[in-house]
Length: 311
Length: 149
Image (cartoon, rainbow over all chains, first blue to last red; front, side, top):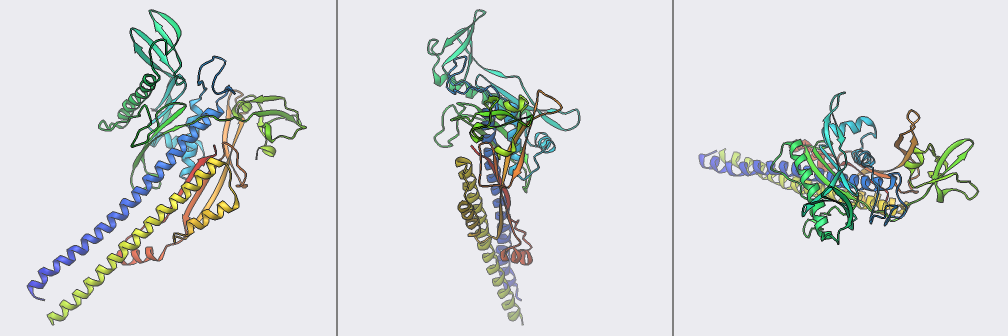
């Protein structure tokens, strides 16, 4: 083999090596893209399920969605604990993990630095705290109001965007937003900005990544099509997710819900046992003792799930 | 003699290039197929969660769609029923859990649908890549779950 050919041979060998490296890199990148795509789908399913379940199963849910006994426009009750547990259960199922307390502890300790629930007149923030038994768990906060300051007065806004409580000169009074010149747009901007600023601060504190930020628009975006907070909303952030992945990835999701109809849950007694089922599944001759707006409410009243009719 | 060695080396290099090119095409097709299967399962989960209806015909369509991309896979659809009962140890709290129900054709609001997809065995392409290049392309294995609205 002459010298010239030896030098020429280096070119195809180099090309061959580069081709192999590109192929390996392409396979790895595609696998990571697929993992990110599946995580995005999973967290979206989980937040949507959490918002729907929270809305439906929170006790004392008024049957008329538009008004309540307080005559608040768009009022709804929300239990953030229901949202949290449902989110964790659906996310566990998306990765074929067991539905158990151990899985929930694993998720909260290792992957969920942030969780937020936007309710009617305030929002709840869940952050990680050290568990005395070891590891970390999510601790919920008190409900923070959607506070807004204008002209030496403080307002407690809500997602109905029709009325508000005003604190001025030591006097608390309920006012219509239209009377105090606060538009629905202003209200929406304030609520979304408040929550996204809080989330961003807690995110940076929890992860230490100060160059990244969370932004929630106040209206449906044109390009990114991110939904703003306009109703009961669940927001979750997963960090360093390495379940069934080559590398650790992150994802953020916003899930909302709206009730269109509810099913009445009926409680009755059969052979001395208090049972509940959806009223439309029961035979006509069964005497209903009590009615509830959700399964959670029926169980809290001491009625048990009736496998005969519910399944 | 040196001319003979040069020719052999040239042929070997050509063969190696052909193998690399073929491998790239096969891997690209396989990765596209996995994406398509994920899209099919996503559409299925969205359909079931939005309508609350699943028929044997829809299930057959899902199986055929997943099989049509050339990857032999096992698709399993499971139904989880929400059960809430009073906590016998504390009258002020309730216990929420999910139980698996074999009837996957009757759904109610609050149930969870889970679809598991797991590829069976290795494709010829994966076996070829592993033995020739030592490149390990992972099996298709994912799960998606949603809540019935």
